[in-house]
Image (cartoon, rainbow, N blue to C red):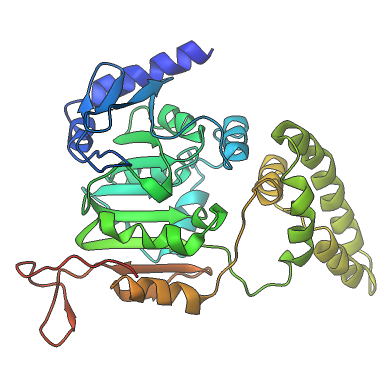
Length: 350
């Protein structure tokens, strides 16, 4: 089965080569020395470092095998199409629009970087709108994304957000949806991204909010659950999530005391309560499996955007969603402008 999947991904890559893939080849850089990479049949080579970045199961790997995101690789292999939009279902598209405060025309014809693409949920949306998406993920979930988007303008790499393999100012748009808070340092991860954005380019992120005490107990449980093997945690979620869901439904139907008791239960034992049983298990696993899961405020995230020189900030309908643009230039009095790129100076984040 793995060989068939790899062959499907490889054929897709071959088909795209000469269009999106060849454009991306020009942008690839060594994550260590930032030198240009040369492509061979099944790898990329950094000549100054003497390092090969191999193709494994159809995906170029810029990271070693195991890492703190392994649970996401298991998750998206198991739930490989659960959150994909389809006929009569546009849940992911709605979430993307509400969380990023963007419109389809923001991405049409643009070269877009999806940071933490997972199984390709949001890359599917953006490619459907006409965007040309490069997806990166620290886990092997990028294999699933490449398979799901086999007929789209999509190229995936397994890479680390802290050392991305791209030249500066490569992308028209960058987005990261619910990913950066799963890194060891969310602020640092965020501040590394604007360097890859072209002048005038759009950047949008969505992060977990720090405004809800609902997280308090689950954060304590996660100290144990993130140490469980992904298959064991998955089996636990398959048992516990439906029990708590139906217990909540039953208690909520009891007059007077039922709803307050159900509310206490939700806070003591947080699980997803989506009516779709597969989504319910997926989201519960997603909540309890990560090693890292930070929460943030609008004040924090706005400071990050501003410290990187991003302007025209706006918020999405669901916290914490923020978008901004990289200015084309700065005027002599320090004000930003996006009308003239002649005197553009690179903006770096402190």
